[in-house]
Image (cartoon, rainbow, N blue to C red):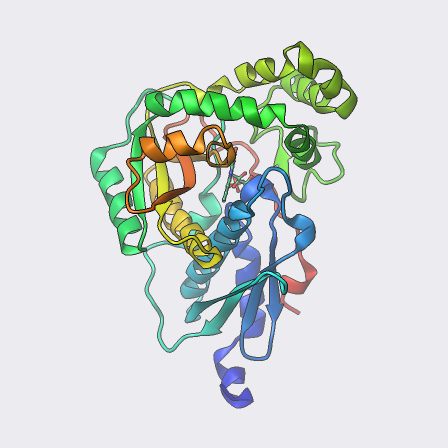
Length: 340
Ligand SMILES: Cc1cc2nc3c(=O)[nH]c(=O)nc-3n(C[C@H](O)[C@H](O)[C@H](O)COP(=O)(O)O)c2cc1C
């Protein structure tokens, strides 16, 4: 593409606006790891290493999934603004890059909208017994198949023992506990409460629970109480995430490469927005895949075949209390994405 062509096909100021809206994309721990590098004729998409998780995302799978959710959200928002774009994968770990967004010849119409992007949010509380309708599940399976993945649908009952074991592993790892505390924003007085991380409201914590979490996860208390049953207590306190009926969806992929994880993240956005539009909420729970003691059982439970492996695990259903009036997880303002 020449400079002249790029000037007419690459509306930079509008793209910066779209990038701000797209930051509503779901992402692990609300670290918002994406980094847009504006070039004369494309936008390089990468990540900021300071926002990549450590012990909580040992293989950086969640990082790549989160970049995928962002890319898909950006393409949806751009399409609504009348800007035709597509994503070209080009993974390079040294350059902290997953690919680039380039102008496209024509606009792919999307059934998903900016309104969907702005309304979507995670749910971590308890669930009603109401079941997700079968036709909705079938549509999710079809969406996954079109994207080259398979979704396994597992009853929560069957996944519960794995969830409980994975929570036990998660809370028992001092590095993971420290990282969770570092990204938790347990009171509005936290200096980053309106920027990023996991706030008390969306963690569905009462004031007492938020205070308990602050205390138990403090390194000195954690070290002292861990041998005395703290891990079991924290697992019990997370019971809303493991109890209830309903189903879990697991995205299974065959390719073992970073580009395929980015694509799986793009799929997660499509699935999540479509479910949300029907009033169905989603709770991803990555540790069931990361926990060495549950991943093989999960793979078997999903009926994985031909080398398939679980990439994303999320509960779907209807919240027991109405989450829509709660403040959402915030996003950082990035001056480089602001239209000048
Ligand atoms: C790849 C990925 C992994 C996630 N893993 C978890 C998880 O293990 N537990 C959890 O409670 N939320 C998980 N989430 C949800 C995020 O924490 C949530 O999207 C983020 O805090 C922003 O909040 P929002 O989705 O309401 O905007 C995950 C999201 C993504 C995209």
